Image 1: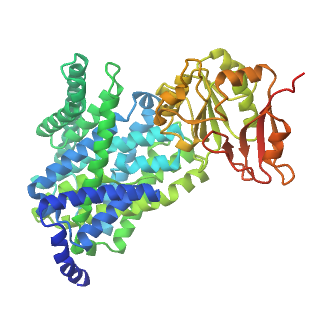
Image 2 (image 1 turned 180 degrees about the horizontal axis):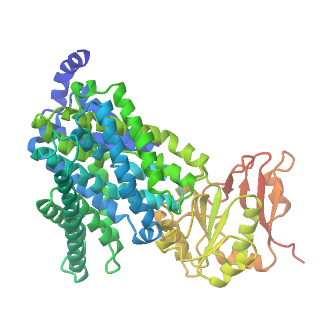
Length: 624
């Protein structure tokens, strides 16, 4: 009653601010982007601020009325948006990850999913008082995670590349799989095949199996055809470069709709397969297409979540009670763990990894979209308790995202699968003085990995007890196929002889390291103009040590007997005192503070050397 009175009181001002549909649509877009910014500012998964903003704008203030605003266009908008999100997810997948972890991913998407679905459906019957078919349908919605839910949490947890790959594949592909199950059950309800059947008979099982086979076959086939045609059109330049992104979007819509025409909602699988095949072919470059889709996905997620969450009304919220909470707890801590632990029992995962996967089951925009599509139709047809689908879906999203955001990093750290503030160092370059730098860092108990394309340098490093990898840092396979485990690495030093490689390595690893922890050597001046001035800020790391210390200078110093020495900072032995004692023969390299945190010296900032810190400097021999 109070909320209704409040909405009536603010209706006048809102009408003045949003007098037309154009203003309302603009407000939704601005609110969505604001929520994304707020999420970044507060280091939260974006879904939480989006959900809160949508509830405030729609449920509390009554400023947004999506049904009246979009009318019959609401379902198509939601469907096409879900297709784009899954297409972009497919573009982020790599076949090498599947070759390494395929059996695990397969079992998670089959055995674990079916067990999860069964348990959640039973919970729907006994906790939410749903009939068997509606409980099965809601259970299918609840097995969906999706890239928008899983991605931010995985980045926050900083897991091993192995777990990242497995959970990323599962999160992207169980979207279309869950959607398939939802639509098949929805079709059965619509046709009355299972509406009043408590026990599945052969006929209904046949209906289900045929639906699954048609969904998979047509989704794979249509998605593959769409990808092949698009790749060939790009290859033979039927499409100019500036139209690549928009053409790929048009093809996505065309083949999404074609698949849906052949089998309802198989377009979701077709969209995912299209993205997967386009991303993994070697014929054309699609980096610009991927970047376009990432930006479009961000806008769609923002707008879509505001629209869907603002549709919740007081009657919807009144359906949430203590049993609803118990249902969500079953989804999170009973169904998911049992399914995962059984599905991965004979896999290469150790128990800690299996336990972690079993405890991670966030819900996001894909679940909300698919749930909203079927709920709208069922509510319109008067199906009993269908009005519970949307509030239960959003309630589950809210609980899972909140719980996992707060707990997943501590759980990963407790299980030894993550480091909250990794202090290890990735050194790109394995030459003589790089190995010496790695040795001194290793002595301070900081993990170090050296990467170089020179097999001889790598063999020398390994024989001296260092952790080294023979690989090309610019190759995507170094992170995607599990060669390089970044779990304990929080800093990157690009110190190869090639200035361009150092800059490109800084760009290549930017998605894995904080920008403040990416460093490269000062580029050489031997080409006349300082290369650093010709490089944009976004394509280089912080300049290490000093502007005079190029690779050539560092190598010359090392060849003339320079050594890396360490000393502890004291009140009577300050940084200035130490440096001055060597004259112009000392170059500060890095500092380890009293909390064992690394600080590298670079031209943008000199770390404060406090009492008790250990200073490492390169010192040249005294002149004869």
